[in-house]
Length: 223
Image 1 (cartoon, one colour):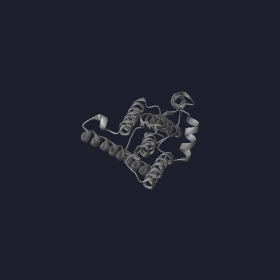
Image 2 (tube, helix red, strand yellow; image 1 turned 90 degrees about the vertical axis):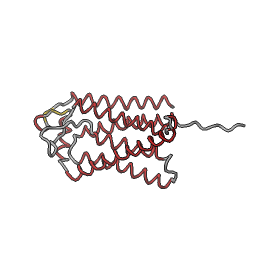
Image 3 (cartoon, helix red, strand yellow; image 1 turned 135 degrees about the vertical axis):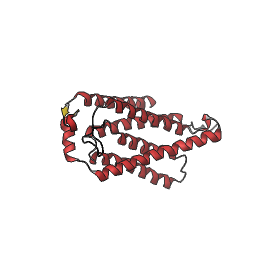
Image 4 (cartoon, helix red, strand yellow; image 1 turned 60 degrees about the vertical axis):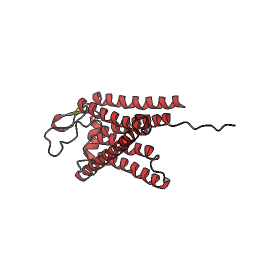
């Protein structure tokens, strides 16, 4: 069973890497601002023609991004408190540690893609004079990873199942709103969003596997 899950994780990671490579070389065309070229130019230009810049949605998704960062800081505070009180890393919830590793990976990927500059935004943002890197959508990654992973850790801190269910639904809804809103806001190419979803799915699946691996084994009753 564990082997099957690792194979699925490898397939997800492989598909994500292949898409990232294809965007660099397939159907490159000058369709961006200031003659910037974009991979999958025809499909990206098609969606860009439909989803033009929408300032309200852009602001909303930015605010949801800040909310995701606040959630990250909240978990960091919990982990820090456990470390201070327990005076040992062993006293920190292993799920919190795994979550911290997940966040670090997201930050590392963000830095890597910012330096790589595979694609530039379909518009020049207000207040800017030059196109910005847009592949993959960092807001999509942040929203999906933070909002979707939070309920998997919060179950240890929210004992009331009804409240936990409500929190889970809200978190998943916020993730969906951010992703869809980011596409409709017109500040990303279609492939930016798709790549953000694929990267997030890979990270979340790997995180789910990690949580199951560190989960305490149930003691079997003695006969």
